[in-house]
Image 1 (tube, helix red, strand yellow):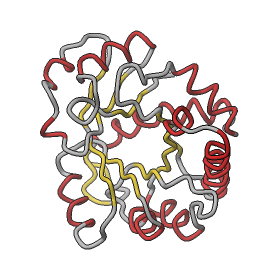
Image 2 (cartoon, one colour):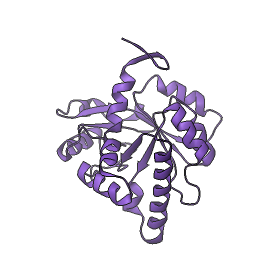
Image 3 (cartoon, one colour):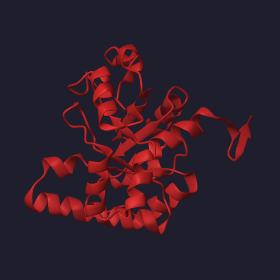
Length: 225
């Protein structure tokens, strides 16, 4: 199975895109998607694209905090990047993101008190928006904070399963030292409640989305060959 990792690179991360690509290749990834918030400022992307044996794609990540310009910004980014990931911070932005078919992946907050809602999950199902799980907090939190985060992940996972939503896994790497091998991420996901095949599909989802987005879809359900 071809595994892909969504990550950030310098200047929003501490390692260059080429360093990330080389490390990901050594760990066994088929490709990486660089999801900086400002991809135009990415440091020397051409160097990363010259790394052989791994696919390097420049996508973008949107930190969804305010609602007024959100839809127009998403529409403008959709035309420029092959993968669009949104990290929503509030319940309202989770709902708005789930309602937008231009979004590929939604990463909702893993809050045990306010998990992914039924309304948002239903909208994500209708608009084919995948639900992302960023494992970075597992490595930075400890004690009761980690326990609460794991509880929130479990609730979001149950809701995503209930509505048969596509799942995505990422280690949220911002440095080549943050990267974890596919085997390690899958093992950690299983501890968090994922089934083995479910975790494998989630770690390869980004590659499948890239293939779909490169095809020409003049309207929903219609492909131009």
